Image (cartoon, rainbow, N blue to C red; front, top):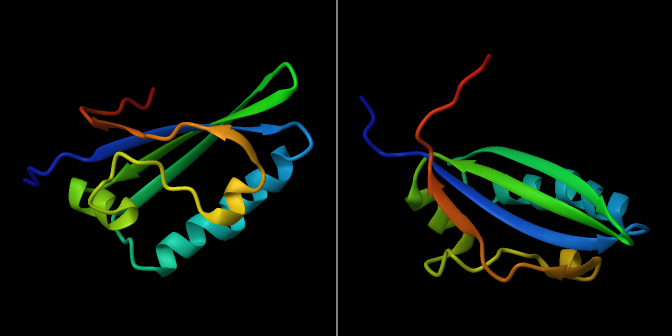
Length: 110
């Protein structure tokens, strides 16, 4: 049995309503495909959720990794810092500077 816990990484960023589609497409078509091409094989799943809040679109990202080692390969040794490519920073209005990390205890599919 694999004893390494899977790691869930969460992060939030906000765009203008006008930039929301641009940022979403960037995540799907550029950011995460590039991460996979760069050899972060332990990134298993990315969930992108949004919420319209007044004049902003909030993005809530949930990334699932196979181990903390894979998180560090993705974000570096200072893995609590947010990973935000420069092109993404140009369309984000503001963002969390740090990501949160949790050990995945289990999943229920009902």
